[in-house]
Length: 123
Image 1 (tube, rainbow, N blue to C red):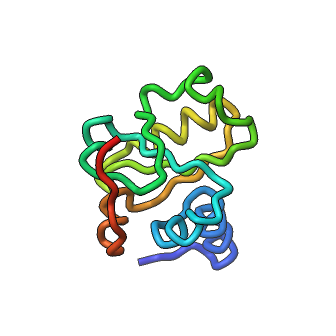
Image 2 (cartoon, helix red, strand yellow):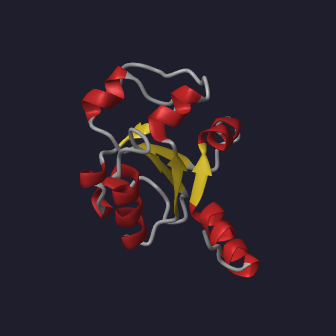
Image 3 (cartoon, helix red, strand yellow):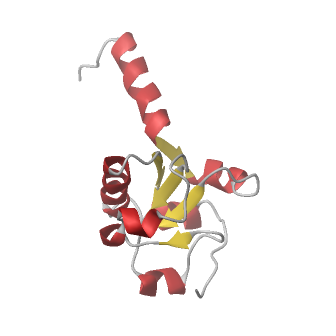
């Protein structure tokens, strides 16, 4: 099994941290704010359980009009169902294509639950 040279590995993993965050870091940062946490799953799944403070905006509905209430420099952190779902990636692409700062919360709702963090239910 071959590996990339250390300098290339350093660049790759450093770049990942610029684009991704994990459930633990989101949990620790929620109170301080400075970002909008977007749950990009369906409204039905959102009602069943979501991260407290998250805004539900399914990835297919992300458009300039849906973001009008947020200043252009707003950082969006997106999550979906988990590692088996690409909704967060789709949302990140849509946000980035609209010129919006974005990071993905890796693990999604599955990772959140795995970390032992509570879910909020309802709207």
